[in-house]
Length: 261
Image 1 (cartoon, one colour):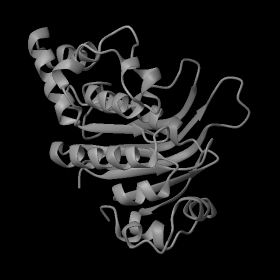
Image 2 (cartoon, rainbow, N blue to C red):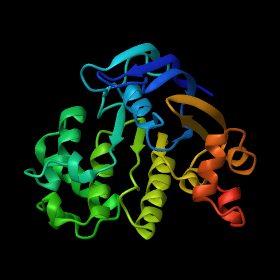
Image 3 (cartoon, rainbow, N blue to C red):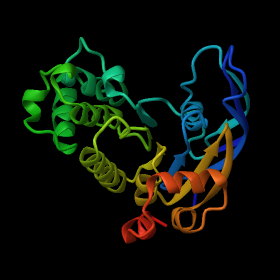
């Protein structure tokens, strides 16, 4: 396996915050793997994702290191790394059409002219299973449902063919049926495009069905790391056991045997 990314003693503290958002996180991520970062609210999982991507807010104090040996340089957001945020209503620009927002990454990072970038945007909207992609190119985000907006955000994130996709709580605002559709879509895209997936969630059931490994965060620390099957069937940390109790019916075979592990 090729090591894609490593963190060594990674810590993050936000201005005016009491405790550190992250503390001493050491983790290696392999190219092509599916890693779920799981934890409750305030566990540091989203801070970790943003630290990997270089998307921490101004004023955040960072200790330790983040290295990308497989890339040889920090990832370029949009080109090397696609990021899908929790709330597509906030991450999508309300005054730009869907087509403009999906085409932008292809135009900027792949050097396509706008005509070809819009052709790619249309194909990507079809790829994420949105109906009537030619019509949706001219639509605005507020005209779409929450699930459709999240599909648009995924299309925009992969427009420049990144090698890494970070999906940060992308299902938390969606109902259960739409959650399952989005997870199935991520599974398909990552497999077909051979991307590395970093999937941030608080839902152990979703993580266990999608990930090879699960990293459990609690109070800013990495408290458990292992194959998805082992975390689901024999969790060692109190945090993992609590998340299992909240989100998994252990009598459901698909949740115990799911995932890439």
